[in-house]
Image (cartoon, rainbow over all chains, first blue to last red; front, side):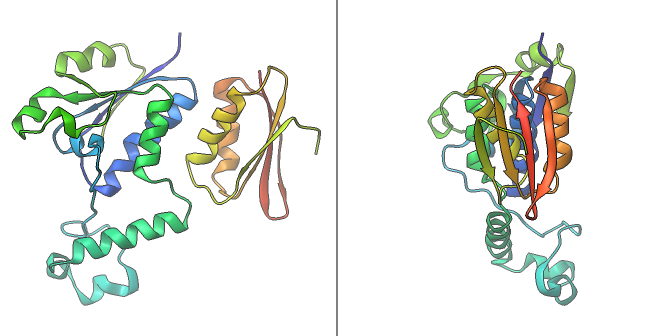
Length: 158
Length: 76
């Protein structure tokens, strides 16, 4: 019997897209059965067209380039355009360091048989269309999650 | 370095790509065949040890060559 990993993905930013996909794909490579349940903002991670961003706003732990955190303390992170500047900086840094794109990791997860489940309630709440999401995504509720999570060896809330 | 049947160049790739590529490449090998992996990610040294332990594919060698990390994994 293979081990099981259950993950709840609740966040929809570029930085927080990584932990669920990295852990899910790696666990699958190690022989785990893996299920990821996407709820609330986590649903952004299973859209066909990803438009994920990272923001320094309200995130004092985020390293800022060129001492920007000294020039623009707290309020500066709310300057219009800061989000897209930081997003493109983060993306180019990731590319330079050989970090996979979110799309690539997501594809590797699906290839490895990771099961993706979207929270039906949040899909309805945000008036999202099933056609906006990637193929192979299942829809279900909390009980669907527990069916798998109840048997899991590791269960993570991200 | 001992003989090997296939080589995977994971240079420039960062966690978890070297492991994922290795897993995929191993899937195409026959039992008993050896895969040589070249990587630049310093984290891969511990990761390939852990990968080998958890998947049961023995790690025959782990070392450095010309500033890169080199691993030999035998398909179980």
